[in-house]
Image 1 (cartoon, helix red, strand yellow):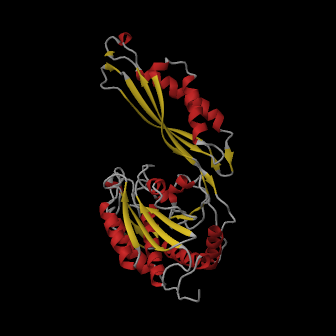
Image 2: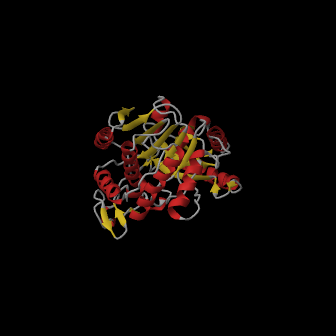
Image 3: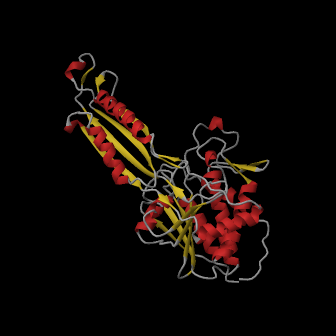
Length: 389
């Protein structure tokens, strides 16, 4: 598509990042009305056809399109963040992008507003070059990712709003590639009992004690089974994440609720994992009407094609920009790519920032990581689809 000059993107990216960090998008609830308005206006001004879609009022997702036909290359960033937590642990205001040395500090700087700033820069670059040389490019900025909820990328897929051939998610991968991801399953276990005065506990049926018996057995049994489920750097895991029960200390609790997180190897399915947990819970032998096991949400993992065109273009671009071969990483968490795990879609996670920076006080992203990420994406896009002019 012809030679083009790549100008240093740093100033523009840092400017975008300042705007993104300044707009609060804490999840829950993941409210993104102000963020969506900013993004929609910015992308429309570049020349994109933009729409805002919401399954729930306030949980807004922005979709910006340019070009048409095949292939459909979809870029994705989630703009919701976790809560800042204890503000005394922050050295800088969480909602201000604060430069210190080579880093920008601020809530969401690494996960994933840094990628959002990079992708805004890339979107602007694409628009100034006339859009894609073939096919369509779609930028999606979504919410509800931190909650593993259905109102972001899941909603866009279910409604047929995006149907990518290739999906590039802006996860904080330190500009390495993630092409394989574990699945995730959340399960809720509820135990029921009978309330009574704590002075006569024998008159009641303690739902917390019932839960202790169940969770102790579940943890022990699953630890034995999962110790053998390993795939390279990935492990199949379980975590007892929440336990809530009782009304007051002087009352025998009549109900207890526990939520469980299961991370699944790509070879495991959500259906099989849920059936396994339910079977183990039932094997404890508690009365059937005193225990309820419910699947809250879950998606299968995926194993990408390392020889796909998106991976190849990114790998070549990483080598061209950095002088080093592309690195491959294993994700600790999960991305919105999981909603497309069962589709015929090439899925890649790539972006600036280190994953461990996210969800931490004094979250930051290095300026060099932002710069390199932009140059890599620019080169990869030029190789993969090309600019119109």
